[in-house]
Image (cartoon, rainbow, N blue to C red):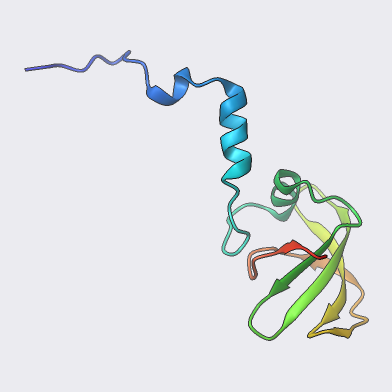
Length: 104
């Protein structure tokens, strides 16, 4: 009978931090249903003020432009919805309701 020791090394602890970071960047999570705050999602994806994102909640694509960040919140203004310009103004946005990607 083999006994495991409490101090046995775990396989993931022996990986170089560079490879862990690279793995994390290539295995990015979708924004839909993410439990992370919008600020953290933006940081992980390299989205900064001025970045335009597009996402579809099922009623047509919405394009937003990031205008600022708080400690946990993201401010953005809607640019268009269903291909038509909108003037919704700046407001706090969550990224959980759609899969957001950078607009081209």
